[in-house]
Image 1 (cartoon, protein in one colour):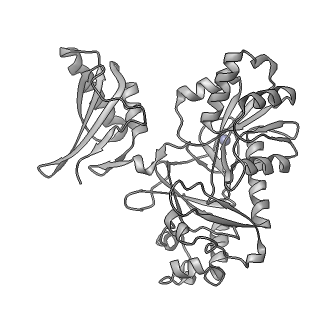
Image 2: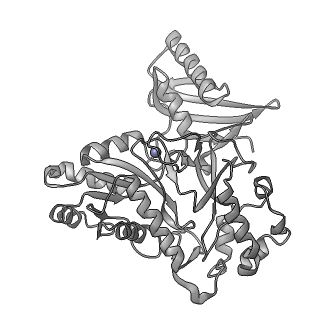
Image 3: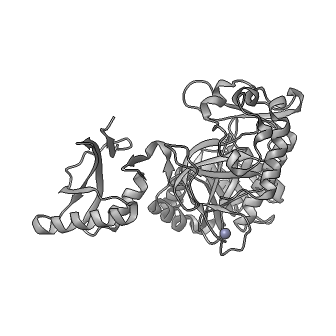
Length: 411
Ligand code: ZN
């Protein structure tokens, strides 16, 4: 993505005093004179910021303002070890609400709506972000938080909630409960904003039809304000993000090289206006791509695709990056292949070899045809030729937990 003049000006402005304000960046960029960073190419040579760097700054080492100017902190929901603490100034809190209100507007939500908020309140950024955006818009916020499904449904009915905000898994639970009880007709829901993560088409269709709502993917992460930095529009062709607050890059997760628009890689975000904890080239580990060109909805804001996965899921074979969602798509398009598969990557005689085992009901010549077709589709969609091997239905291992499907035996 080409950096706009406005974005470059905002970056250069914050670089002028960044090291004085932030001991974190004074240390991180100790070998860089930020005054030398003038062009996009200069910027792309700066080191990335990682979640571990942020963790090492615990508790308030990320702060780039006097402590008196911090009006709130949030913390990312680290499952292990030291949490990451993100300090916010009053301006940061306001900027976040402005971005969030824009998200609601992008989804066609207005001040006349009643926004039912089920994401959690507390140290992390979810519930309070949805609420601040609703209030900023002038809509009615109904701050339930998660859990207690009976009460959710009662309030949803009695207060005539028109918009549901939720994670995809909680939205599914609500949709299933509503279907079971047969109470859809008593509700007023028309739209749902769902926290963006990788969720399947089947789940999407189920939630949309059971709830009878139009779904929008809303994106964000605690380190960068929280949810509300991007959302899908009525065209449902990726998510618009607020490029006057954020500069987005897509990089190769393995090499860190910036990738051209349209190519899938890791989303890296730089904040342009954040005061409490500015982030420069922060690695999100989310896989997506920049969607080039204008959206049919007419919005001037650029787009990233809905999330394709996490970088941890990705493998590189013969110079080609690939990840489970792509392989699942190949299988979906192969006539005769069922959904279970396993990938083995080996290094033999100086060459990488990718073997894709998939379950199929076909035998003999027919199985050979399915294997050839799968290899062709794989080559077309991903860019390299695998060894495709059909195995009988039920042959591949299943597990209660997330099944591991890619085995990299090269290292
Ligand atoms: Zn659009």
